[in-house]
Image (cartoon, rainbow over all chains, first blue to last red; front, side):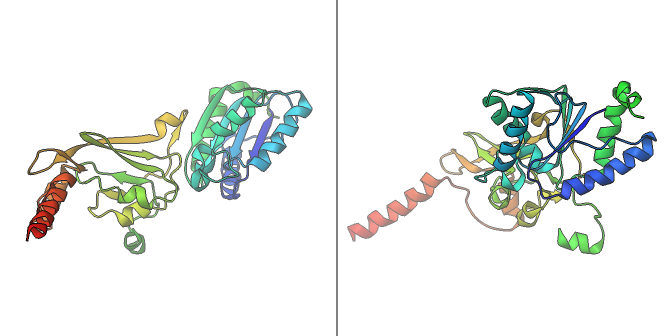
Length: 152
Length: 144
């Protein structure tokens, strides 16, 4: 199982809660999750976790990554964490911010990249609660058993 | 809100809960919201209160600034959905009418009971009627 973790300019509040949630998931399913990629290094992923409002600096970074792998990526199941990533948060009208994951994706698609994903889950809160992260991840892993079986 | 927190009544500060039977549609919540997640749209005969929970940061400034107590701190913090459209809370309120010309005023019908509770003897009038009275007075002064 390949996990992509994108911090698109967040304050690290959601990231700390994500760590707490992942610890709970590991306790629940009894297997270790693989360490995630922090940038797009591969052409297909199973789970993508997004935090942060999507700054233009991070847009440049993701564009560079996508150009390196050929402009085509499958993100799998996308989990969008926090009010910043869902709708922009308090930076919704800031001049260097795309304004959430949807707008960030629109910016990437308008630059000609082919991005596919299977499902999106929006988890709101500022920051998100570890219970919510646990609930979403465990639900995802149980509804797709081949994800768990690929874990060692 | 802070008084509630100090008493220990609420351990989790959830997203604000809106009571459409007490809201007068003044728009104080939307003016004070730091993320502009609350919007009060004034249509012709109704007022639409829209809350975008996806953008809400649970600061509850709206609860502090609500004059009627229509907003309260909720117990539920988390809201999970698979599309952004499901993260909107929309309430429609009927607009009140002007007492003299029966035109719509930019407040909901709850404003009548709110004013009577406060024992304020204010006639609910639209902007045109209020300005009309002022213009009549000005004309009288001019004639003198």
